[in-house]
Length: 513
Image 1: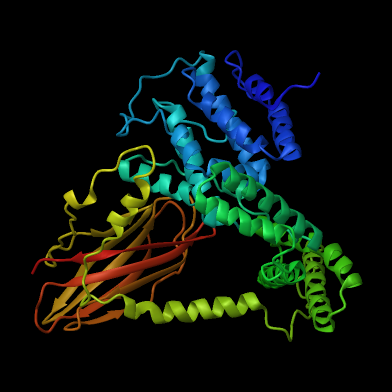
Image 2 (image 1 turned 90 degrees about the vertical axis):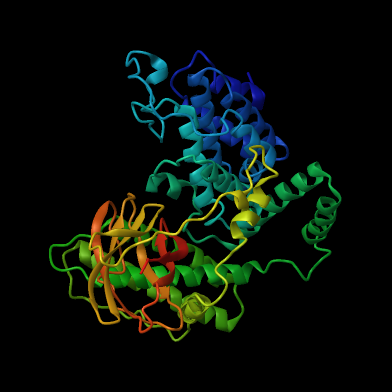
């Protein structure tokens, strides 16, 4: 007996059920992928109605199904959960301001309080498990879809909703690395055929959504997209062979990284989980590169792919030697072709090094950034008050006080300043970096700028990586020469990577004389 998609969803989220049926959830995902067309939208809107059920167990089952669909149904489903209509419906039960976080001890025997089968397990004293589960999903989508996805430009409303809820005072739970990894794009090499099929499915889903919206600008975009899909517009046709070669460059860089990591092991060490993942990506790529070489006719591309194949194979040979206890073997991983990715990374690094001049305290410190963000979010359901009515406050720190004072305390990163000494007009501070989150903060860079009347010197940072849940684990000395004995003002910009995502924080700090 065959069931409609809506019937399957209602069965999976039945109010009489207290445990999710994973097999049924995966059947729903398979049905969405097989039908395509309007199926992703039908599923998304049906699920979000059940999320707003007054029964907690039914709402939680719907959220688990929503998570399964997001991680198994690809771009067509992601496009639907990124619409304003869906996101507004998802947060419909959210009050204007966050409710109190206190709740009495739940009755452990009650089935609706047993949530250990979900990816996100609410705390025992948490009064609002549905709200917290929704916050978890929105944060997960914000990182995996708006920052890591190939189609991030179509997911902007997720980022807007994340900012709006944060502005309203909602606290997002910490993410598990595994849940983000399950939603992030796969690192495996895709063949030309797989790249073409992925692009075809994405274009078809976007075309249907544009036609459904029906606004004049959407119909213009739909017309442009149809010309590309039918081959009429040859100028904007993707070159899938070039895309494949770019993917080969990425695998080549991974193989080099694997070889370097293996080379740092000493006798008795074993490959860790990261090395296992890199080795798996390399092994998966070999047959696909070999098949591409059989049909490729461009001599330069053939030589590039052969060179990449050699590097990948040699890295795997090194891995196999390590597994057998042979640590002193070596293989050739040199390459006469410069990877385009390496060139881009070098260019980005040069741009970052030259970006210090952008932080100049003699420029106007006022900014309309907050107001512009709120204007972008006003089209969502929750009303946003005018930021202009809320005065901004800067931390005021007396230099004579040797206590640690926060310069930065946001998103798990805490940087505290400790005044060390004051000699004539020279002030010296020691910065302590702490990481309150559960993921490491890598490639940590602090840029500071002072008024032109002062001279600023940054000492070397003790480490570029701040370990998770660490306190004052990284230090750095800051020296300021202030000949006019003015009130010290600093503008800071901090960049780092977390969950593989580039993060940035900026602001101002000053002390009283």
